Length: 119
Image (cartoon, rainbow, N blue to C red; front, side):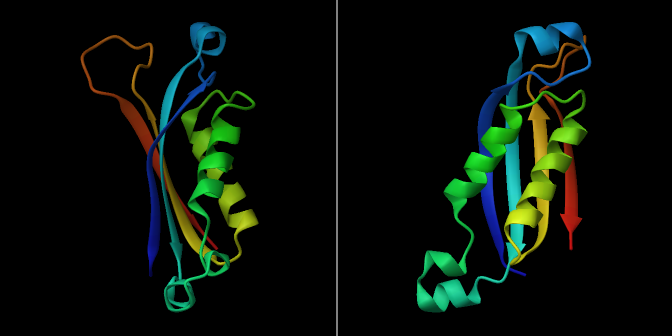
C-alpha cells in the first residue's frame, strides 16, 4: 500500500494527568502516516485523487490545540478516527504522539505512543 507521511508536526497543547500540564501546557510532536492508493493521483496529477497534506496538518493542529485530554493515547485515537472519518480513501492511519518534556523525573529524550487504526 502507498503511504503519505506528515512528520514532526509541533503544536502546543494542554494534555496530561498532572495539574501543571493542563495549566501550563507543553509541546507535542505528531507524526502521521496514512495508507492510501496513490496510483490514480500519480497518473492524473490531481490533488482530488490524493489526500491533502495541509488538511492532515490542520486537523492534527485542531485536535492537539483543542480540547484537552488526560492521555496522549486519547489524542492519537482522536486524530486517527477523524482521519478515517474524513477520508474514505484512507485504508489505515498510524499516529505517533511524542511528549518531549513530560513532567517525570529522570534522563530521557522523550516519551511517545504510536497507534495504527484501519477500516
